[in-house]
Length: 475
Image (cartoon, rainbow, N blue to C red; front, side, top):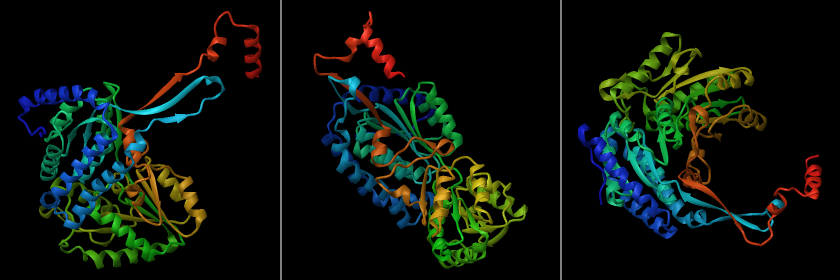
């Protein structure tokens, strides 16, 4: 079995064209594959992922100093659970879905059948490359598609493991991996796929969408944005601090649905800030040195970006409650809490994607809602509180890709729920059945099964009775 290896630039277009031609030919045959055949492929992928556990852990540490537990939990488990969930239900998902016949469809029988979209491109990010390469691939395989995967060049060790796992699981005419930088992505995006699945930031998402538009290719874009957290006056601040610290500082905040900033009722601000300081320093120390088990920022450039957000906020009057230290050589930014952050600071305008947590207070929930609604719609939104009216007011008064109440990120782990953004935070949904749908075309099939058909009354010359019935129905 094979997958495409890195190539010199001169040969890149030729090799991509060769593999793409193989996929164009193979996608036709894949339309007729059965659920059993697709499940067997998923199980082969699962075995390759579990067999590569040691290499995944080693590569995750080499690329980002990711602790073993985070490498297994954040990279492997989402893939394994997605494959298990999909394999158990794929027969049902592929079954034609019958629909009732209304009066104007008398004499017909109809159903919806899922057919593969065909050849697909999966562009995965650097923060969790195994997860975000193979979860969409599992959906593509379940739908009966071919796939080319382009992992991020920022995590080269994990990208290599992605290629190795794909090569161990599939022939290159069905799944191939191209490593490399932006020039590889640009070359891949010039081709007319049937679907593109991209995970990353909104700016590159626009580039992908423009390329897809050239061929009218459908897209799933999993982007990001500033995911807010509402904490009302009834919330248990110790519980909030514990759950925020878990969600914000896992993977050093480099998670697309990580809490981005907190809006807390002014009566609970001091208590929450104190609880966050205790929680963070109890788990990670005061930031004067890097904890042994703390994922690093992916590279020095991103350390500079995150530190720039921190420095700008402090220059504008923000106060550092805990943390605040950055070490570019070690790719380390300490878990940091900020208060008194001006709303026009860069940290409140750009997605942080790092271990900085601004905490702002509000006196009137309407003001907090207005601040969130003035920004692009986030990928996730969280609300903590025991007052149901407050929770419902936040959920109904905002728009987001998904939400968790009294915790963070859990909605993205739920296999029966769709995952994705809205507008600036994403287009389309994935996860479970929605992932299968993303790579499928829902084909409408209607059969005329009797000699009678209502269309016989809708042919010229139109009978007087037809005119009378239609005029009465139209009011």
